Amino acid sequence: MVVTVVHIQVKPDAIAPFIEATIKNHDAAVKEKGNLRFDFLQSSDDPSCFMLYEAYESDEAGRDHKTTSHYLTWKKTVADWMQKPREGIPYSIIRPLKWK
Image (cartoon, rainbow, N blue to C red; front, top):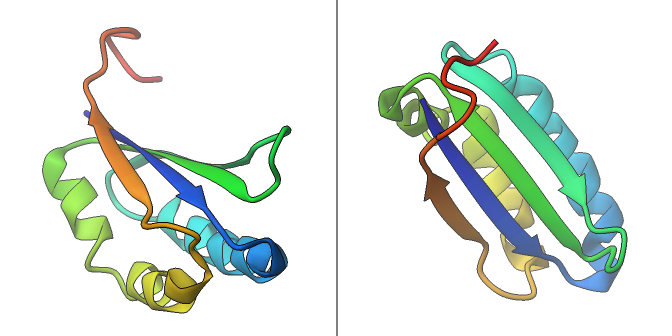
């Protein structure tokens, strides 16, 4: 299993369209083969800060996500709305040992 946490800071005037575009990406991503979880979170302290928590069964499934039309559309759509480049950090699961 592979988990990536993506930190995103968007321009304040782009918050609403960013949310709309990311919900579309989320809704398609959770249907992908190998997707275990795809959470889309907004900071309670700073509404321009977002986080994506993506869990896939394998590295291959995670890589495949980045080739889907919905991801490529999202990436192109939101590019100019970023205050700074998004940062994806891969993590290894320690617990739980088995994903339910």
